[in-house]
Image (tube, rainbow, N blue to C red; front, side, top):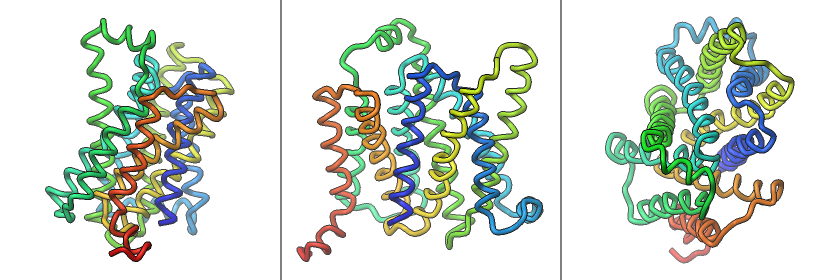
Length: 303
């Protein structure tokens, strides 16, 4: 359970950092690249062996292909999420990203044959409702602008699909390659591939003059990278250890992340919660109650 809580904390800080970028007008892509460099440094610092041993052992691992694919995908999804946040607002980007939980949860039931129960289904439905309501803004210039540019709606849709597929990749690695844990090297390789991909793009952008590096981007990337590393590391550990598997982990982490980042925004940016946002937090609470219904009954000796 401790890994699930740590994953939620890191993921909440991760989403909150996008709000920080938006508030302080920090250009997202350079910060995202420095974020992945920070993740790699965290991974090597967390490793009990020297970096060259990590790389040499990982080079012959059967999961290497998945780590490379996920790493390259991660930075593209992160970049797309950042652009969607600028185009539609952070709330819309957050909704699209977190609704991606539908994909790994569907796979958990259909492909991996995890137990389907009425309270799991009720919890997942509450999670979807909570994600939408918690991020709903009654009226904003961003929303009005988005309505008149029909084709642009593909951006949130792509964030939804690609973030869900990335979560499914982490799910696949847990089911096939790390059923008994030990995914630390895998996490490091994912972030290393993301960092190398980002550095190559950023170098081109800097050389062509389309991007100018500033210290705020470096500082923002470091602040983003630490919780980003923790979010994936603790997600993998949660998938391994939490009873109920991915059909429990993904709804709980996603909905708790939305609730946590929303509360952080209220505290630090005095963000206003309308009636729909408050109702969304109620559904978030119901999601946790439903998914952990049996454990709560056992705890209260009601079962």
